[in-house]
Image (spheres, rainbow, N blue to C red):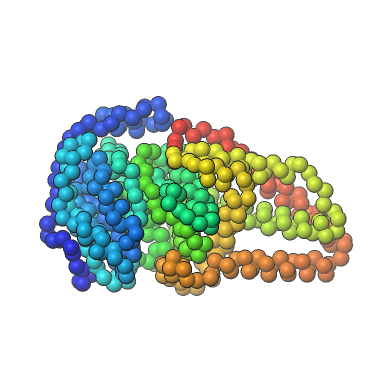
Length: 491
């Protein structure tokens, strides 16, 4: 990091107090806890917030990100844009905002200063940029981490800070994330965006309904207590909050903050639009990296430099997700296999009961879509047409299989580099699961033809009840989620 170049003097990181105006009163009946009263009775902001934006080739979004931060009702006291490994005009565009800014908001007159740091080639990539930014703001009360493609709502920082100040036990709070689908063009891109919006909504809703305990303080838009970061570093013998040997640096840090005795929360009010993946290869690489890193945290014992913590409370949701994906994989593959076998010997008898699971799934997807704060027609159609959601589930299953296969093979892969390559349009690995599925289907067909009628009948006689029982249990779980109270939460 010795080759860092700043577009504003690094030794002038100024801190200014924020004017003390009353926070807005929010409808108290909206949520089951006392968060609304916290907002109502919090009148003065006395904390300091240092914002860090790690940026890699973000020329298309960095201006909007900075402008969204300067347009906050509670502006961060300082904003550091840390550009790393970039090959585009990110530095040039961001430097146009460098320097002091005097801003008047509903909370009064505020001041901030924007610094742009080009740290050049950085082998630690985003982790290195985050840690560099931490070294610049460690003297502040809070570190606000913002991705270089995340556009926050105007009151996001205000809401995060208000709740963080209200409870010293809080080590970090995440905003509610979604993807703005309005500028997305192209059928594949819009399809993937709709699926990711549903995926984000389901994940956020699960965390909100679990006492607003956030499993992952995502780097997209989260605020961290620097006291909590220092305690996590101390307990884990680290000199920086984020470590480079984890595929999911934000998940690992969340676990460490929780283990240090702090709370990790999700705000029911703060919102931010993040950058989504608009290509199959990019989405595949991102999800495989995330899932691989999560498996590494879940796996008992030591894998590399990361110690698995299978019983950590922040990983319970991860276990449910992986078990759910395994069940989805089994039910779909077994159903299609048994269906093909039954049709081949004219032994299939249609029962309307098999329509219940997809109907419940559609209703559940529709209810999740209705919880979105900015739900639109695309979200509704994605839920009720069944096939878009089903195709997206198959895509997610392929990520699940690739992640576990890569993890169990112990093959050393730079998932960060693979994601970057995929986002540039390279790589064909996302087609591997489909090729394997086709090969398995051909092999099963050959085996089916080779075995006799007696064996075929026995397979069907044993297989259908097993698939039926698993499907019933899966449907009951979906139904329980369908009728569960959401307490007015909007994601």
